Image (cartoon, rainbow, N blue to C red; front, side, top):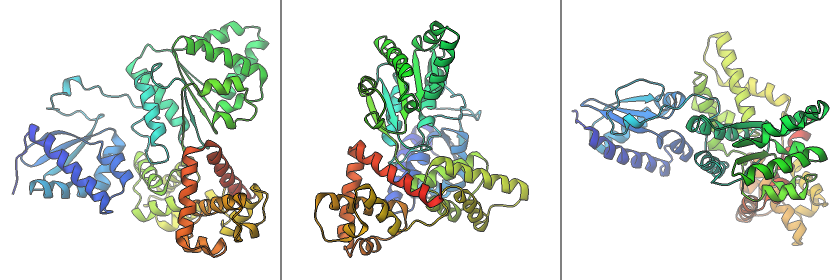
Length: 451
């Protein structure tokens, strides 16, 4: 049985299909990250008696939908229309007849390595991405400056380049200057040596958009901070957009001058945290699809569980898997992936991290002993350290709430859940707490790897 769906109908029908797919999230048939990243971005293009054509935002998104979610889309159409049409997925790189009313006005985006389309969104970065997109759409008028902070390897550089690429695409004549804190410092030193600071200032102070990556590098460098301060003032007074990234929020950059910290706080400050499990799975699958590599759900899940430090670590693993596949001409296996991860972690995090180590490290941060954290003391410092320990154990291990409670002196799972939720709220609202937690986790990883 076939049911003809015309172009007007397909738009309304596909809204119902998306609603059905979104309902699958509640039924745990698909994750919220997968729905938001892959399915919600599909657009109906055309339909006939036997097929429906949908548009994905990129070639790798198209590949992901076809490989992983085609059957779910078919199921949704069956439940909505009573028939299963052939699902065709195209991307903006494909050339097809588009019968939608807006097809004449559609602009095909250029391909870049860093775009908003290939940035995987999860709870840990959704606000930062939204802020970055707002800046890209309204440079100089929305959130100026925009300050994005977070540990290395979580996507700050991706977002800052995505802003530049989107602005350049929409406004080709815009003068966009990208620089790292180290590059800014080195170029200033060279300009002083050549006695040509005029050219240096002309380069940076005439920018329509200034993108500064890893600005923390200028801290402690008096001449560089002086020059950056005046550059910032000049650009901001003219309405030029400024975007800055750092490994920590302004007030946590200890040797950065207060007058510069204050200016960073004029606009919007947003953070990027460690990606949660679902986001890591989505990142793994998207990177694999980009490389033409198919990973089973078992392999993706194992990688996401084992590699939780940063996105670069995930990318490195996928590249190794791809290289193995090309050399051996065989699909990746779980055993092979386990060996690759073991190689990666041997230089980073091979030693197992248990609750005992975490409790000891947290105790040291608060000038306490591990026995204090396990004790019945309700002193504020002890109580806070106990909550932090519970939170970090949950983040870094697979321990259950009952196991964590046992390690913390016999607390029940409800109490441990309260500890974790309390610190989670503080991490979201208190930059100092977030930075401290990130430092604890990074120090534990370094200790575990022997570096």
